[in-house]
Image (cartoon, rainbow, N blue to C red; front, side):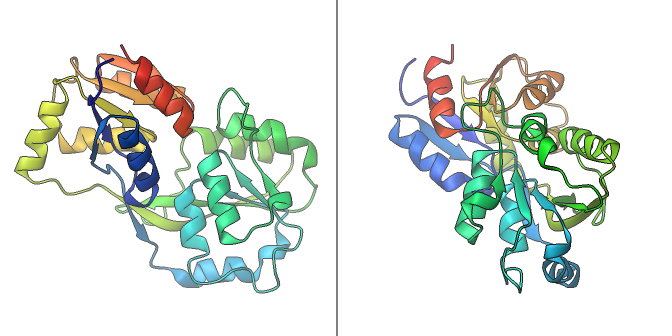
Length: 263
């Protein structure tokens, strides 16, 4: 593959800097166009109440790095981390937990050699450790037009069903909000050009594809190329009409290898 091919990075700003720097050092041109804007949730009292009740949960699942950052941006659990497990589906969220001060021994996540980082892989790690009678808390984001939406997404909904089937009570709380970015006419024109000029769009969220469809509702994506970090994200790209889709694991090494081999 010729170097200096353009990679369109669609991750939220807070999650994209290291990826952008690493991909650029590998010889690609990077356009950072976040398709999800992440804002703090207005109801901090509920987040603080969760931190106060931390030790009543057997585990807390963080759906993303943003969930970690917005939960602990002001304080940690007042009585320390205790024995409450912290669940993460991928290495980025796990790293965010470590940076927040969570002891490594309290974090459950799929091993680095796992075939995929998702809720199914997380379930294989945690299901044998579940304690009857103690709730699990899911900390997630919500859409800006549905500030307290209980919509968990395909993977999280599957995990919640497994937990409930095992007799575990599940609570859910939004700790941040996701917004569709605002693109002006020049930005939309650049994006339309990137849909047909050989640029590789890098998607790490199905919702980013939903936002892209809202921003460019009439765009023909048949000439576009995309790299997706999960099979479900790849399926969403295919539904959008992207002509060439490859799937890889959401680690920088895997992403770089896939970019290098992209045909």
